[in-house]
Image 1: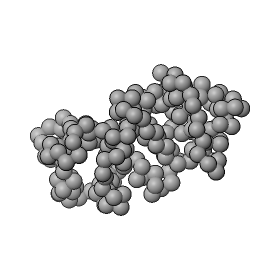
Image 2: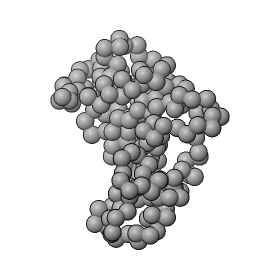
Image 3: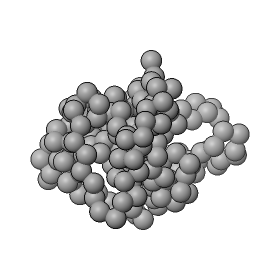
Length: 190
């Protein structure tokens, strides 16, 4: 169940609308203290009124995941994404779990697309301090590793498979997890 209709009514409340406007457009940062029960509502309202991505930082990754879910219940057109912490030492030789890596790449991809296009629905990204402090590849380099495929467009199949392999995707007989692709005849599952 989504509460988007209720958010429209709350946006008309004068004191809440004024606080959101000051937070987004004021010359100085505005601190607004709200109880945990209404944080997701206020953040969804800020996200709705902001014409740019909104980054929400929490103390812990578990709280970030919960808050992303809660904001998503209030948000209508804007994607709400959790940017998780890989939860391993920074210089660990272990690979990051596939689902965590997929969430991180999805959030970074949405931010990169919003930056390039000035899109109509920039994302709300919720993360923790630890996840935010991890080093990332520079945005320009990150964008060079995009592979954009659109429905109905022609693509060179061997080139697509080479690009997927170069991007770290694993060729498997059957796709079961993020980061895998399978080729059967003229079809590539990603």
